[in-house]
Image (cartoon, rainbow, N blue to C red):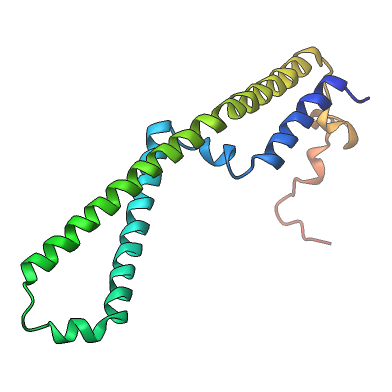
Length: 164
């Protein structure tokens, strides 16, 4: 017999898992601070890669200009300008990432709380079902008796008796 309460709970769980598989369930592994720190670290790595790739591409585009100024350039000034631009670039990207990942976490949290509540209700349902089920099943009923009824004489061998 189908229990409507169990079907409703399991349907809500399945709908959440299907619709929010990537957002909510991945967030369930993290606390808020850990989730934000992890994603800020990923943003740091990717934005660093992007910035230096952009610098390398701009140098390659104007390579002739940089080659002609190679001997007369003030390298301390060039490096300090690059590092300043890099720090500003990182600061902007880290602030945007912090806001975005905080918003994403707070947006997914209520659905995750509801999902966990549905899981808790399903567990409670199965606990109620288990406590009301008082049937005892005999495991050895299909074997044909109890172990006490087994005749052990077939397993005993006398000394000197050969296998036939």
